Image 1 (cartoon, protein in one colour):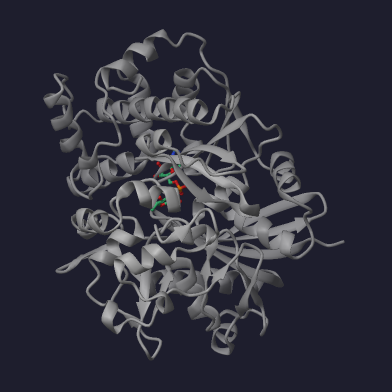
Image 2 (cartoon, rainbow, N blue to C red):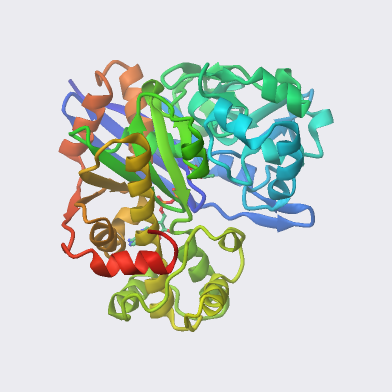
Length: 485
Ligand code: ADP
Ligand code: LRH
């Protein structure tokens, strides 16, 4: 049998890409047909995504895909939480807000007055992040005019097909989704005064999500009637689906703009201890639970690079990582999840301020020291989060799978192995696109189940193993210094 081609549109906060996966009985070959920057824009009313630019990038990638292969279906995933609103004519109201805009944070107290945080957790199992959809909606100015709310991948699916739906893994990040019933939470919607009719019906990964509109087929060269498959449209859910684990005792770090650090479970953990540790129970494929925490991730590095670029200084990764490798270990450490690192702006300066406040010294223009500080601090947060996850679930962890763009950062992989005292298996880099493709392939009948998906990834993709150095004592005292023991 010749392999079948599936197209994944994968929109990350750093970049968007279209990847074609050719899936055979025992083969998986990937080609990236297009990659484009995802650059937000600060407007007078706040920080926004460029939704039409992303749509155009997806069309460009699909056109290149269709020129080279007979594409059997298309799937779309993106970062979580954010949404667009459609009016009665189906037109997009304004530009979607970026989750790094502060408007959600300003609405948190008001939401908690209506539904106490403890009740929210009991129902949704969702970690508290100030930008969760429900907080953004409490600050939303356009709800009166809105007829339909669509999360970002669902908005693009709507533009490609005309259909309306909400994919469930991403719905689980809104704060409006009941983790116990698998439906929108009527009590939360009522308490917040949200009209349930604004929320589109739920779709599950593998569901049919419509066919490309005639003008989309004409613009891309896709066969008329090419289906869209609802994949795990939350990028992290697709990444976890593609973790190349071959045993049960694994943890994962989906490492890109964010580090999503945790375990795959069968049942949510909704205890007070879990809430206090701010672990989330987001939905994975096959009703699995992604029990994890957001760690600030390589945003700290990419935003530092952006700062240095605007200052006319060197900002290329290979050079920065080389300097970090040569820098003095444990010179300065931060808790990467400090809220002051969330917003865009001069990150080296904020890291330096944090260090000054905590009796450390970090010169913001010493690039080697800054990058070393970021990577060691991330490794400490990885270690802390993995240990908490194991404690809260009683599950042993013997291997860490690190997937996403961060798996190409050899220093970070080694530091994570050293800090955790566990072997780190790095790769694949494009786990998210692979998870997207394999859910389509499964819907097409080419892959049997989740384990077969993972085995296929493990057999076909380039992975690199990092052994821990063996002595975690230096890491123990470093962790204590930043309260991450
Ligand atoms: P997202 O999906 O959130 O946009 P990615 O998974 O694409 O993020 O990861 C992007 C990050 O991966 C970049 O910020 C960068 O730090 C890291 N990265 C990408 N390529 C390399 C590389 N060649 N070496 C080291 N790090 C890399
Ligand atoms: C990673 C991610 C993460 C969310 C954040 C908004 O791309 O989807 O899982 O918490 O973006």
